[in-house]
Each structure stands twice: as structure tokens, then as C-alpha cells.
Image (cartoon, rainbow, N blue to C red; front, side, top):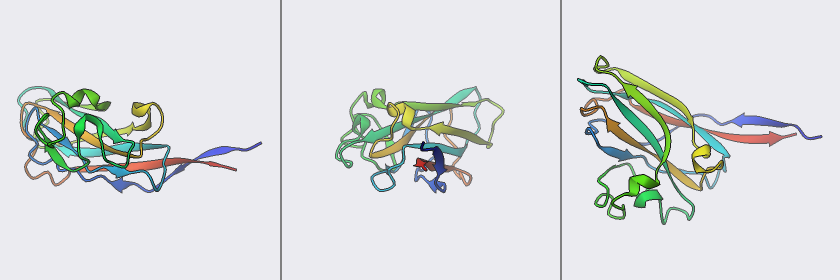
Length: 168
């Protein structure tokens, strides 16, 4: 009888510029191409350096995907590291494209977190897409802290770890 075991890949950086992300602002990452490694799942984790909030808030992490090699992405995103203004930027985005994003998790921020680093994750990505990673996927961050994220942001880091299953 075959035995299955989990196989973790080395962590890889995800490109996303979170410095100076405005309050109520969305930012997408560069897509992760899963067509070569063919991971079954990925865990995402990282830290975000915040500004000086005066009230409690959140930073929400979403996933987006593509199944056609990147011709179309969830919500009309374009697979790049860009600030999102739904219906305007990227030009292919739809006005309510945020409704097509998949929730991964939420970071709580309180008013005493000035210039701190908030760690998040690990969040599993595949469950957001029905249990299997799409061919290409990426992340979207929504800043609801009431202030812009730290302008220096030297400690912003977002990574993923691909997961496969071995059979012996």
C-alpha cells in the first residue's frame, strides 16, 4: 500500500509594494506562476510595517487567480504589483472586482501599533479556490487602518511555501 507524505518547498518571496499604501487602498502582488512547480497548495506568510493608527483597524489579505495563463485574472486584475482603483487601475479591473477576490485572512491593528511590524499567516491558498491552486495566483492587500502604511516599510516581507505530496 502506498504512503503519502507532505513535501515543503523552500519559501519564495512574493513581490508586492506595501509601503505608503493609503487607508482604504488595495494593492495587488505580482502573480505566482504555478504551471511549472504544480503545487497542490501554498502557505503565505509575512509582515507589514504599519504607520501610526489612531483607531483600531485591519489589513485584509485576499487571493486572486487565473486559469488561462494570465489572459484573465479575478476582478480584472493584471497580475502585476500595482495599486488598485477598481474600474480604473488596472484598466481591465471591474468596478466591483473586489467581490471576486478570495479571503485568506485578516490582521488586526490597534491604535498602539505605531510603526510596528504585524506578522500574518500562514494562510493556506488552495482552500480559497476550492482546494487546488490555480495555474497563476497572487495576493491583494486592503489597508483599513485609518492611516497610510509606513513609508519606509523596511520590514515588509511576503513569502509563500509551495506544498506537494509524495507517494512511496
